Length: 352
Ligand SMILES: *[C@@H]1O[C@H](CO)[C@@H](O)[C@H](O)[C@H]1NC(C)=O
Ligand SMILES: *[C@@H]1O[C@H](CO)[C@@H](O)[C@H](O)[C@H]1NC(C)=O
Image (spheres, rainbow, N blue to C red):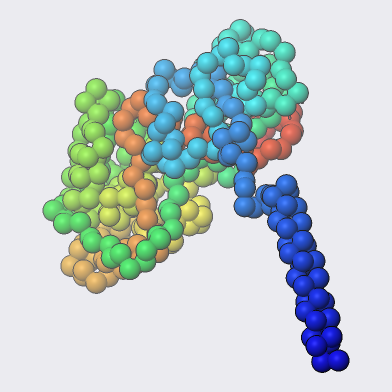
């Protein structure tokens, strides 16, 4: 009896083992024929939209690879080859290059999936109103907060918060780099303020002209050698915050800003990273405050507390890369914004 029960026990175990093995084999086969999408993502390249740059802004050409190497942006395939027009998902059109009679815009019919992007980096006052472009575009690209694709210099989160920020050596108190060929720079509110300021405090003005443009190293070196830098925008407009503000942040210098209200800057950076001229009743009060900070290194260094958590990226200063950031940003965002829409009144949203 005992031997029969042992052999029947063995038989049951054997059958169970075979069945289990079969089940495992089936599961394996099933798994292989239906790979989970998480384990085997499709090649990313295939999914990237194709973006056609219709005009090179001001003929300033750069290498499209810069998007990846300078800004870590590569959300699309960029091309300037107009023969790819019919296949392009997005067409980036620089407003200032459009002729009044629209004769240099694409003429062949638009594919159903294709979107035109209105690309304008000028201030509303400097933006030519072109009759007939209303109702042509699907997305906007400019510096405004409400643009579909907004161009701005942002801080990046620091990966390694143990890396200490080292304040660059300071040789000058207050500096300003002024482009002698930029007429706007000498007519605006900023220049008037500067003229008042210099009667109370020494300002090192470094003149440059578009002809002998400072290369990246010089530009950031000069700014980093100053404790404060005049980040005066040529025109005061909502959301108009340019490289003149990013420069000192990236160089390790405190920007003194003149531009949109403080709250507008605080959308981009911590409020304790800069000084706003509106924080003071006049230029004399600001000068006094800067001279006090000059003697109080503890108080001065507090302007860099944000450096524990964020980095500011250097912007390219080469002239041919003037529009690279905007173009790369568009490339980065089109893949994420697969919205379909049209903009019946282009100017209404921007020119106010
Ligand atoms: C636009 O021009 C008007 C009138 O000349 C002026 O009052 C306004 O400040 C300008 N705006 C900008 C953003 O330059
Ligand atoms: C883009 O805008 C045009 C003009 O308003 C419109 O005819 C077209 O359907 C829009 N396309 C997409 C993809 O949104």
